[in-house]
Each structure stands twice: as C-alpha cells, then as structure tokens.
Length: 230
Image (cartoon, rainbow, N blue to C red; front, side, top):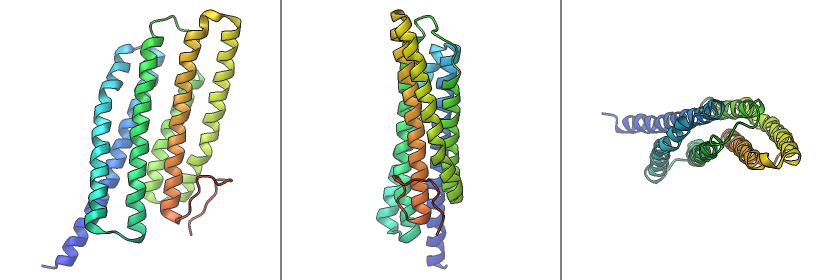
C-alpha cells in the first residue's frame, strides 16, 4: 500500500470536509436570517422563538469546524495555500457564528415589537436582509471556487446595505419627532436594521478573507474593491 498517497487522500478529504461544514453553517445562518425577517413581516413570535432556540445548532457546527481546523494545523502542518485556507476558515467560521447570534438578537427585538401595533409597512428591511443573505452565500461560493471577482462583488454590495440602513434611520427619526408615542417601536426597528447592517459587514469581512486566501493580500482597508488574483 502506498502510505503517502493514502495519507494525501485523507488530508484532501479533511480539507473538503471543512469546506462542506462551512457551507452548511452558512446555509443555517442564511435560514436564520430569512426566518427572522419572516417573523418580522408576519408578526410571528413563535417563529422568532424558533430561531432563538435553533442557535444551538449553529454553535455546535461552529465548534466542530474550529476543532477540525485546529486538528489539521496540529497534525498535518500545512504550508502555503492550505495554511491560508485553514486559518481563513477559522476566521470565517467565527463570523458565521456571530451572524447566527445576530439573528437571535433580531428575533429578541421582534418578540418585543410584536406586542405593540405595527408602526409601518416593512419595505427596506426585507431588502437589506435579502442582500445580506446573498452576500453570505456569494462570499462562501467565492471561497469554494476561489473566485476573486465574486468576492469583490460582495465587498462592494456592503455600501448599498449601509445606505438602506441610513434611509431607515432617517425615516424612523421623522416618526419619533412627529409622534413621541412611536419612539419605543422606532428604536426597536432601528436596532433590527443596524443588526442587519452588521450582518452585511460580517459578510464583507468573509469576502475580504477570501481575497486574502487567494491572493495573499490583506484588503480589509483598501479602496476601490478591485483586487485581482496574482
């Protein structure tokens, strides 16, 4: 038996497992975001509580991915590109887990918000959440396919989410100034909007790391967002 080839195949399988687990974790947090917004739109407190309860599954996958990455670093002593992938995977894993926590925070606010009459129709918030979910999905696709162009696309999309958050803030500020009775509800919606905006920040950070993994270049503070593969 060729032990070296066997070991190499096992090593490749372990790297693939890390990628698959990251994709699964990404799918879980995207689902949590979607359910959160559905709970908001439908005033469904039961669904919001389900998202909160399901966070334990996200935490479990987070722990598993981190353990696998640490084991690969310790036992395989990877070099060059594989080392960049594993260290990047650890950081991305942390961002995804925090996104799951943010979905919980959104649902906690929704449970309170649902106890009062609806303040206004929700238009921009669902748009923000859809973009944030898309950014998570595309950043992970960029990771798996080593696609710098797609990662740069994700990084640019964060600006649009920021502008929607500012628009929501200005609109709610007007509500509060015109009628003090809306202050509590307005503040809760502002907090939800800000949390969605922070989710998009995490998705952008994942895309930043993907660019680093592929090119070896740290682009977190670079503008414009057009780093090419070298």
